[in-house]
Length: 116
Length: 109
Image 1 (cartoon, rainbow over the protein chains, first blue to last red):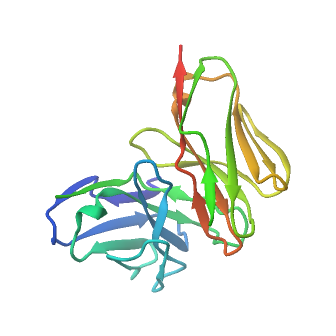
Image 2 (image 1 turned 120 degrees about the vertical axis):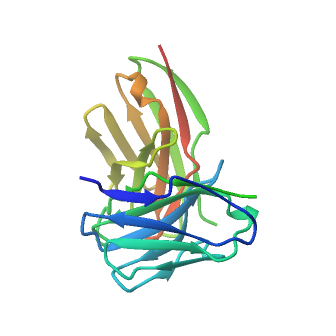
Image 3 (image 1 turned 90 degrees about the horizontal axis):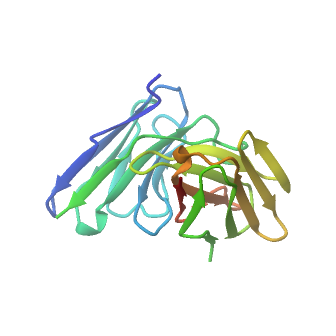
């Protein structure tokens, strides 16, 4: 059972370059999320989706875009990378959404992105 | 503002018991989560508390006091594989998760 799969595992970009991170889940979850994790800080929500075709902004959405064309996939894009976007990015999914109980998040293995 | 506070690092001995504390300040409260994250890996769910009291799951237990804005994760019979970061996250009135920076737990033989 694959769970949540993220690609790539590592990526190095130059300032101004663009890239897309792919997240796929095989658990038929409605809810999907993109987080970034920086040293000394808690996970911060970038964007999330409550179902196929929907997206919403999280705590730190600037500089990122997302798409959820298929239920199982959630893409995170950086149009013009900046050094401040150097971070570890985690995708997550959940069966239940906020307000429906103790929604348990299932995380992907993360992508280490460095922007030079 | 909203805030989750937990110690940055703790050290404990294999076979012992350790308590990791978490205090939270959120706009409203709709539950508290604990996740485990081994170095270089994804966080994995440990526990969820929404009512006061202790929830026990094998070697791990989680406690919540809503009146004090306080939770702790109790790990018993520590094993080397318990060396990891433990993330505390509170959910506010808008059901948004506010995450702590994590507590790195080092287990020594």
